[in-house]
Amino acid sequence: MGVHYVLDTADVPEGGHAVVQVEGREIGIFRINGEFYALHNSCPHQGAPMCAGHVSGTNLPSGVYEYEYRRKGEILRCPWHGWEFDIRTGKSLFSERTRVKTYELEVADGKIGVVLGK
Ligand code: FES
Image (cartoon, rainbow, N blue to C red; front, side, top):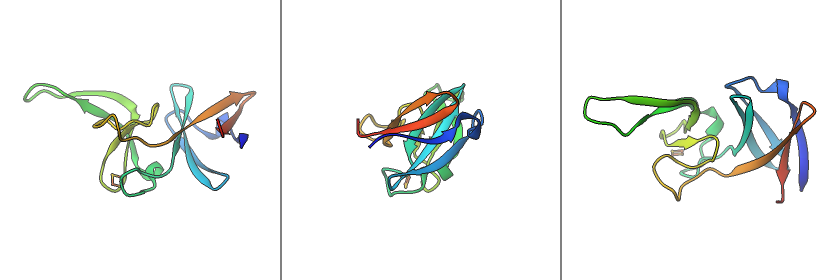
């Protein structure tokens, strides 16, 4: 429990991610516009390794023959069946009740710490 410093901020490039192990948990740490976010590396559907999925944007609801592609770099698509999740919150794009577990991070002095037990 507590804060586990697992990476330097330089280890996670802008728009990229790294997967770390913390007390038996596999956690993906993503960097979006200079901010860091942590997701459990397991899809709530059937347990796929989420971090092997594609990071993209998504098409927002729109009219017929209209496409509104937004949120580029903020959406993680599960590699097995394509469910989409907001990297910032872990919430799925299709249901308020379906989400990937997120973890709090502490970023200080160029180090990234995963907070467990809060
Ligand atoms: S295992 Fe992720 S959508 Fe099915």
